[in-house]
Image 1 (tube, rainbow, N blue to C red):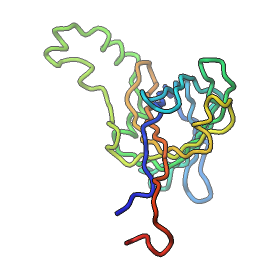
Image 2: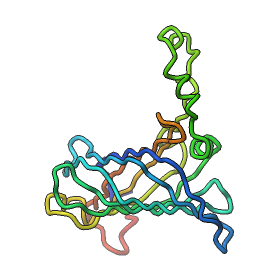
Image 3: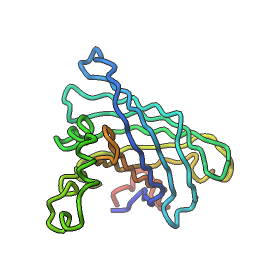
Image 4: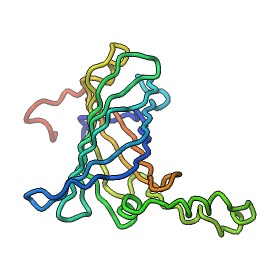
Length: 206
């Protein structure tokens, strides 16, 4: 079957998340939360057509959790601030995130200061014996669950026009953070390109 689109790895989003503010329930029975991001970096993949190194500020991430708490719908908006002092621009992301017990535990119960201090006090011998905190670090690899986002960029200078008027798809993962009460979010974004074809309406399946 002829593909009509293809994707190319583009950007890596890495964030430290402090907490979620509970905003109550909706009339549908779903719940609404606002996630507080402390630090966010956005860096281009090697070889991608647009090379960018930036931070993201002025973030709002309102997330709706279904009556079935295993499904959430984030609505992220933030300002991308390039390190080269180019004009800032906007990033918007939304999608569907499936949550298992591990992810819900990471988000709701990040490591405490006592747990992190235990990590810092491990010796190399402890690590070699695998009797150490790293053994219990909670991580969810990309693709373990369906955690997929779409992203778009708006505004900015012509230097980054390769990001504008395009659609990106992304995969998200989470893990325990390195500071008390915080966790990490990683997002790999890929740009969607159209495949050139000679196929017209009525001939899609030939």
